[in-house]
Amino acid sequence: MNTISLNKNLFMQIIFKIYRIRFILCSLLLSLCITGCSKLVETDSPYTSTNAGNVYTTDATAVAVLTGIYTQISSTSSSGISISGISLYGGLSADEFSLNIATGFVFGTIACYKNAQTSLSASNTIDMWSGIYPYIFDVNVAIEGLNASNSLTPAVKQQLLGEAKFMRAFFYFYLTNLYGDVPLVLSTDYTKTATVPRAAKAQVYSQIIQDLKDAQGLLSSKYVDVSVIANSTERTRPNLWAATALLARVYLYMGDYSNAETQATMVINNSSLYSINTLASAFLKNNSEAAW
Image (cartoon, rainbow, N blue to C red; front, side):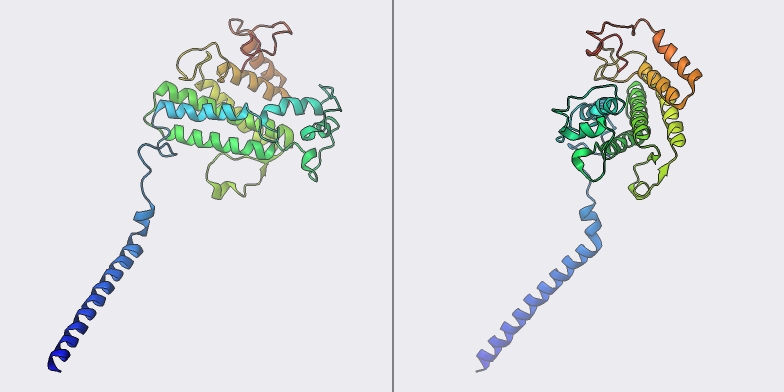
């Protein structure tokens, strides 16, 4: 009986120690979870990945950001509606074009042609608003990232910053002419921009002019290739003269004809790059009339 009793006591001591060890381990793990969760979650991004923290540390990745925006705006969305169609839809609404009604039911082209767009039917509405603002966010990200970067080649940083300023002006020019007063978003802080009210059209135009003047001081006077340093015959990236041509249009739309003439004359007088072409080649890429 004594032997059995001793063995039972020993067994109970072992069980108690096991549970005590388990309790200590559980307590330790709980403590680590409570005090170290932020460390476990807030891990650094892999060095092999590209993210907002490192995309502006090398010339190649920084250039890719703006190149990606050009690729997106030159492509058509799954619905057929994109900023690349602004000239078409604007021309239809202004009666610059005649529409073949037999095919005009697609993507609201009839509604544009008849100036009968409505918010009640998606098939009758060309929604550029929701399509353009994501691009504005992208260029705002680029402007902030480029301004904060200290590792880019100075010439690359300057050209890309000029391109981003030009693109923001380009997007807002169409937004304000399509919708009048629009939210003027110049930051990437969504807590501030999510509820920003519409700004007066005059204020939007003022920002467009400022961005284009900044772009004039930053952009190359030549067309550049994907490296944004070497010259190119391709007119795919905006340059100083593209910014000047858009600025001339902005002044024209504002009724400031004197400044519109000054800016337009600067482009026209640059005969080494620009000249009037034949109608057959006027709409071909890289023709001598194309500013961008």
